[in-house]
Image (tube, rainbow, N blue to C red; front, side):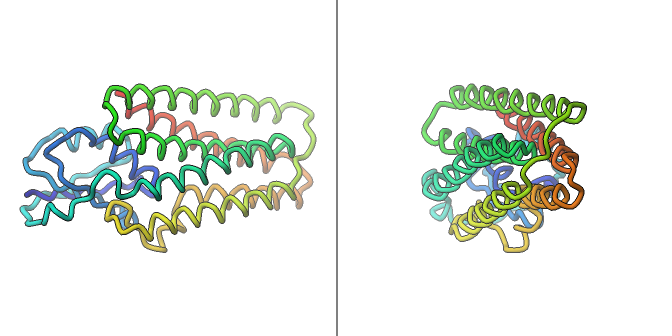
Length: 265
């Protein structure tokens, strides 16, 4: 059995680990994937050397660097089955989709583009978890088709959001409700911590995360950014902090959409 180690510098949350799992799906000679998200490392256990592993990882544009291969002995009976994480994945899927609805609704009501953008980031994570669950027992061709549709839908929403941010920059828009921004973002931040806690508590090596990883998670940073934007709106009595944060988050969502689209290739 071979163990190949890859350093993936942009792998900083469970969603990206799920993207990697799906990208390597269907390669029967791969027996196990172990993720060390804190140190941005992926360990691939496989029965033969194959260049396609590195090629597929690089297609995700997560800054993959091959670190070496060694021969190891592992007990394949301990390899994870496809349903080990399904309960946890369903839980985090519903949490992310639920907060997508909450943040989108409150964002539109409060006129906060930061909340609207953050809701799309939640939707992006929900898409990835849903695709991971969809992949269990489904045909690869069907999964790729769903990935493409999901990616295009997410990309379209993000681009519409960017256009709306530009319109509000140059238009006479009312100041967003900073109270709604701060309260809802704190709730979303709590939800993200809970999701990360569930994934960390999973006995699966594929979802291994240490507490310190939480503070480098893109989702947590985005939530904190919207909270900061709400505080700055209160302090400056201006719409611009919200629009700036919204634009930055929409760009992150666009990046995520392109990653999902790569799964459809």
